[in-house]
Amino acid sequence: MRNRATHGPLSTVPELNRTLRFARMEAQQSEADTKPYFTSGERLVEFLRMKVVGGLDDLTNLKRASRSIRRSDFMAVACEQLVLLNALERLMSLAAWARRVESEAVLVEALVRERLLDELEIDYSLVPRVWWYLEPAIAATSQEPSPTLRREVLATAGPNCYVCGEALVAGDSTVDHVWPRSLGGESVYENLLPCCGTCNSHRGNTLNWARAWFQALSAPPEPNVSEQQAFGLVKTRIAGLYFRAFLRSRESGQSMRDSLLHVGPCVDHDLSDSQAPLDFFRFACLPDPDALFA
Ligand SMILES: [Zn+2]
Image (cartoon, rainbow, N blue to C red; front, side, top):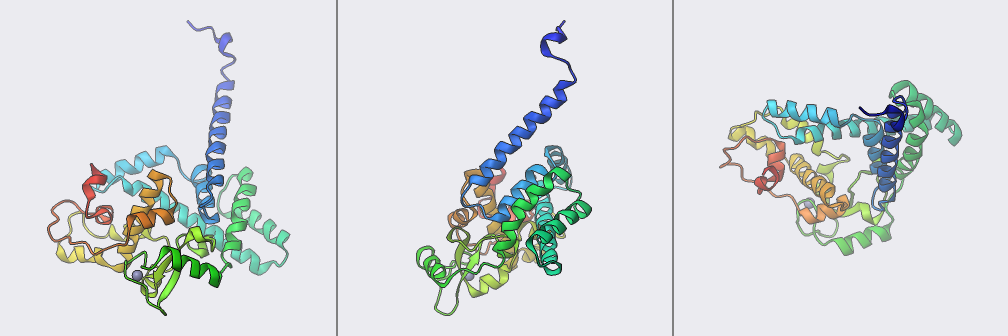
């Protein structure tokens, strides 16, 4: 039988586990901090993912639930993404409100910290770190890309729209923020891609793949032709593009911008021969779904 004395008192074990868990999270966080392509909004979301929202047990339960309704395991990822984006939007609007009602920076900060504790059920010890990530994210919302930066993006990442692949024409060429400005996406080269006016207006200001997945849940797992047509909406196709880039970015460590360029423009998918259960993820991964679901 083990001699407990050689392993120290048992009461220190949970404490040690807590310390180790904290050290691991700190290490992951500093990795997120040093990725130069992460925008302030992305850094805040990474922080929320690691310190505030859910955990592995929740994801396992969600995967089990998605299988039970014949949906992909990615449903769990989409749920997590929805929760994180929702928390980010609430934080950004909370900060915007605080800036409207208080003029001094120090009072804005105090107000945000107070409301964070009241409304978001965030642990007291995390509030200063949330503010630390939130402050630059708010600053990013009022940064317009300069004319020089716009020209540089169009000259070096063009000449085609990153969403539809069509050649850009004078008078209809814009630069799109990969991570939206309203969610803390800086106006820097690493966060901008050339985009035609039509795709830019369809894309709007959102990171919409997780939301499109949610809307697509209203279609049955094996939709008929008319139900499949709902998947052809432009916004859903853009969401599919962002979903594939999201996976690529997670697997390769590339930035979202580089991943979007790697994945290439979204195209119309022909779903007429599809016999397999279909959901947003399968649609988003066509024409090669097996590579992902193997
Ligand atoms: Zn386009």
